[in-house]
Amino acid sequence: MITTPPSERDLHAYVDHALSDAERQQVEHYLLANPHIAAQVQAWQRDAQALRTALHQSLLQPANPNLDPVAIRQRQHRQARRQWASAAVLLIAVGIGGLGGWQARLLTQASNVLPMSDALAAHRMFAEQGFLPADYKVQQSSDMQGWIDRYFSHAERLPDLTGAGFKPVSCRLLTTDQGGAAMVLYEDQQGRQISFYIRPPGPQNSLLPRGNRRDGELQTQYWSGPGYNYAMVGPADAPTAKLLDTVGL
Image (cartoon, rainbow, N blue to C red):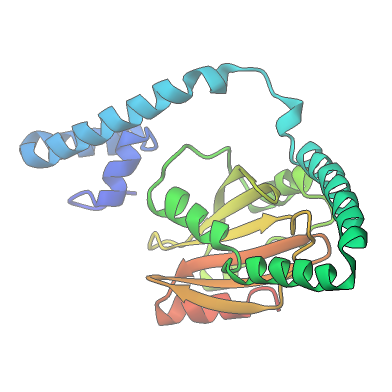
């Protein structure tokens, strides 16, 4: 159900063809009466069409098994083994002093990367901006868990946030430097959004201690489980931040 007058979220849903016929007619009547808003919506529609055109060819291509998250992880594991083998030869050649310097460099590089920054970027792009259509939309809450299990076997169960009024509504598959990832979007009846993010720890098996951090208007709770890193991202307002602190315990 949309608001009267339509909110910015409703207008984006209109651009994304995510409204019912009755809701679409309501928005169109509003736009006829508000030409300056209609001009902005038309600009959004042109941007969306340009994006759809750019992606059209790739979306029509048959499924590429090389993009399957399992295949991606396997390739990265093979690459990691080759890299570590090369590193071992180098370390033997340069001796103990070289070993200390090499490890120090790796630790320095790791410390320069904030934990689960990709989860924050995904939330901003897909939850706040609605950059691309969802890969999967929920019909029932149980559907999402089965869909996630197809790509991330033995992962933790999706957080159950129904007690706080949040339900999973959609999911997107992503490709990261660490391997295939997924972002599950939760919403409540007020339209507030929280995202659950899962990906492997990468070739260096960079598991995370449980922690949280704030980045602008967003709060991130992150942790690791067997085989995967996880994050929950949402608004940093007090009620939502308190909810995020309870996830993954």
